[in-house]
Length: 140
Image (cartoon, rainbow, N blue to C red; front, side, top):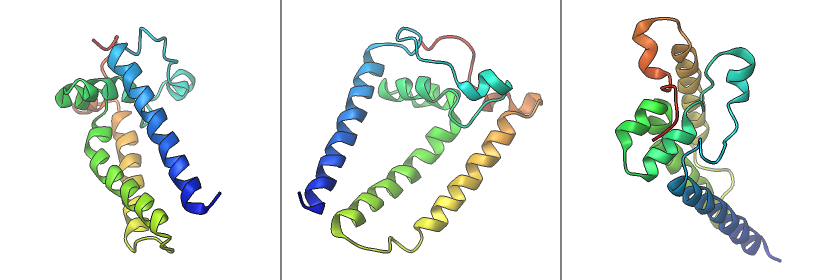
């Protein structure tokens, strides 16, 4: 099997898994499917960068971007950048371009720094940071 065939198969499987997860979240609430709680939050009592993402993805699939923003603001704000980066990565891989685009490493560092700032800010015990934390309770 050639490189492009393997790559197409991996890409097909990725989108198949993504589509399956999207279909499950479209139909069922994360509380209905008994999604496991965040291990980081359970162990340390702090919110990780992904806390609220499952409920935010369900809101995105329902077309409610404001509701999704309430559950995980970083996911909504960084999604276009991450999707663009993933599309560029897969396109470059498909064409066989190595090394990858010039700014992709810089973009990755900037996103990582923003996520770290987000994690620190959402765990600060101040009232002004409450909007960064996901609301408690099930996702409607």
